[in-house]
Amino acid sequence: MTTWTSLFLLLGLGLLAVDAAAPWWKTASFYQIYPRSFKDSDGNGVGDLNGVTEKLEYLKEIGVTATWLSPFLKSPMADFGYDISDFKAVDPLFGTMEDFENMVSRAKELGVKIILDFVPNHSSDECDWFLRSAAGEEEYKDYYMWHPGFLDEDGTRRPPTNWVSVFRGSAWEWHEGRQEYYLHQFHKKQPDFNFRNPVVREEMNNVLRFWLEKGVDGFRVDAIYHAFEIEADENGNYPDEPRNDWTNDPDEYGYTHKIYTVDQPETPHLVYEWRQILEQFQADNGGDERILMVETWSPIEIVMHYYGNETADGAQIPFNFQLISNLHYDSDAYHYEYLINNWLNLMPEGKSANWVIGNHDKNRVGSRFGADRVDLFNILLLTLPGCSITYQGEELGMLDGYVSWEDTVDPQACNGYEANYMDNSRDPARTPMHWSDETMAGFTTGNSTWLPVSTDYRQRNVKTERGVSLSHLNVFKRLQQLRQEPSIEEGSAEVKAVSNYVLAVKRHLSGDFVYISLFNIFDSIENVNLSSVFGSLPAKFQYALVTEKSIKKVGDQVSAGSVTLMPHESIVLRSTTTA
Image (cartoon, rainbow, N blue to C red; front, side, top):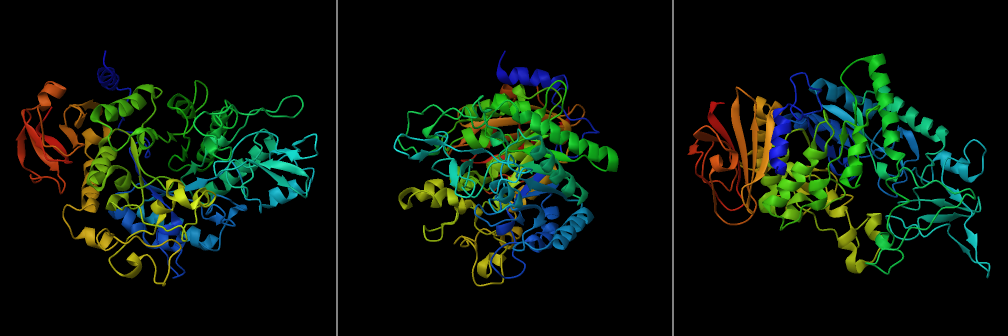
């Protein structure tokens, strides 16, 4: 039995279909906002919460159900907000708690849900908890991962293990005051919490409760797969990780094989605990279901554990990074088919899929796959079953902005070398949002921005694209309308490679129209016989969505036996009769 056939049988049994009473998030359109780069309201060149509030109507315009905001909590900004010094306070750079409350209130008026970025793996080294832990205060001494290291025969002190930081160099940093090393899997100003300490777990539980009370609709959980390390042995020591053979640079993150510092078996159970916190809040306060979205770049079999197990529910949305991690510029349609169907086949019964192709840590979609494929990926994400997560600006086809070495601020790049900084920098995907063709892309009224505005902003911006009928923005908005159609929102899905060049996605709900999305991945003209791909189909289809690559118009009819695709063209067809 082929992969797609087994998938179709599962869908036919209703195991992957969405019922009419499905929770709001199952087919939602999520939109990631990186607040620093979204909209600056006060002219200082940095985006802020009032800027988000100002643009919430735009989210409504483009059909967004919910937005998750990258961190805006109090932070020294060593990693631009992912180093939090106070988990219950807004950083003045982004505004005040009153600004946050006003944003939530306005979002509720518009029907847009707010998802908070929850960063549990580590704090800032300026967090009060860390300062107290470093001082040896009894209550806090085991909040973080401490170890005295070892003394060599010549008296040289060395770190406890060979563990390497994601941001290069040893994951252990010596603290002169405490006379011990602390673990930091990221920046040295981001000490890792000790989640084997139940007091730490309860502290983080209280952080969730605090923001739930403030009105958030859920949490995106950052870097969850780093939360636990292997437990220390009876002497309090940790093992070295084995070497990888592809680099001889001991400061390179890939120098060791990560078997003790990520994907420990206890980690999914931490998510199960947090799901219980949300469910208890729901029981006590009512309202729509609050959700967990978790970030883990783990093997797919491990990711599936985050959905839950036989006795506990986990995250509603364990991020599906299969497309973002495993697709490449030259991937053919069979590769797309495999990655999509593999997730659907491995997903536990009764769970819902999600699709991610861009975020603030990866180069923009148009830069990775080519500007000709921007519409392709937006159409793919928005016509597959389940929910979609779109990074700000991808609906416009924004490309990576050029950021010179002198302007680079990302620690992942700054901790390396100028010669290859662009290979490691996340800054190009974080340049300011393009709102208009005016100075500074309408992002700020100031004279400078925290990262340079991309030079192509006059061509790729909200104001300009609103006025172009087949712009990326208007294609995206049309897609959001199509998502409301019963077959696309609730129907079964069949995903199949027609050839090396063309991918097809069929969506259908009994008694409704059949929708078929076609994706011509490469630069040749292709012809498709839909009936030979999917079997029995209505004889005629009409174009429900076209792009600038198309020579047809919406409403034009076409025979199911012969659909011609122009180079890089992606379309959505709808049957002229129900089935």
